[in-house]
Amino acid sequence: MTKVTMTVNGKAVSAETEGRTLLVQFLREGAGLTGTHVGCDTSQCGACTVHVNGQAVKSCTIFAQDVAGAEVRTIEGMAHADGSLNPLQQAFNDCHGLQCGFCTPGMVMASAALLANNPRPTEAEIRHGLEGNICRCTGYHNIVKAVLQASGQTDTQGVAAE
Amino acid sequence: MQSFDLVKPSTLAEAVSALAADGAQALSGGQTLIPVMKQRLAAPSVLVSLGGIAEMRGVAAAQGVLRIGAATPHAAVAREAAAHYPALAKLAGGIGDPAVRNRGTIGGSLANNDPSACYPSAALASGATIVTNRRQIAADDFFQGLFTTALQEGEIITEVQFPIPERAAYVKFEQPASRFALTAVFVAKYANGVRVAVTGASNDGVLRWKAAEERLSANFSASALSDLNLSGADMMADLHGSGDYRAHLAKVLTGRAVAAS
Image (cartoon, rainbow over all chains, first blue to last red; front, side):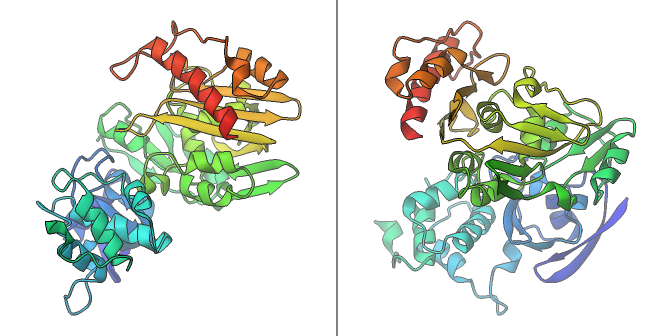
């Protein structure tokens, strides 16, 4: 076992790891941050998406020891300090961008990375940018609307019901 | 996944020495190797991560050649190669999905030589040189069949050198679930001729379509291909498409790549 330390949502977190310990296991079992979900465990569904040094990655397909020392951001690090939702999370809420919610942590993290690289994406760029994240409930339309709203391009409040 | 030790050297020399251990295997971005290990189709006893070796990352162009460090992720190639070799940058920006492109690397893709991967077609169509810790290998000699390359035990790709073409394009007919190529074609036009590489088609992995190269070298237009046909006999066949379908697709995509270049 090897002790690995990372900065997760601004706090130093350490846990004992094996070589085969995945980043998502480090986060869920080591750091106790269970907001990051394991969906497919085969790097296809994107539910486990987190940011490593500012870049979206699939945490089920990275070994914890390979990113020792990294700055990691998870869904738990997205809300404001007072617990209120950030604009992207609020947009998912407003636009009904989730139903069962299982994919949502990954969707929010992938969308946040998309907006960091492209602050005003077109609808096509959003759909292309989220193609590594699978949702079986929403049909994606309301997720796309949420990202459009969060990027300040539309006021889509209430549009989900249309 | 079976148990192993992970080591992460910071120099190429340390990586070469770590790879000499029994059962050692190189780990680049891991976007193929880690899923394969989860299925227990690979079970190395030591994984040597190449992600900490600064000398193996980066994109630089000089004297008509684009040099890409083997551990450079696809997302970085998509950004940094765009000004020098747009067709290659576009290929890199279309691999997998954004999260995969932040981890997966050019060296890993070439070393794996998946018969439906994108990068092998770019390397072959560009007549690229694959540089390792031991030697330089021409792309024509590097790809040796399904998941098979000229790499020897303990040999690490350090850099890939692409001669920059006059014109080029990569057109991928995407398998929508995996986003690998169902079939894809890379066409590159150089002063001394045209090269055409087809991926996602042959049972033997990426291939050069030399008949098309001859026609296009004489007349660089899609119409030059009109009476050519690839045989579907040695093409991959699965529920997504028969061998004949892939052969036909390769011809159509070659024409589209010429038009798009």
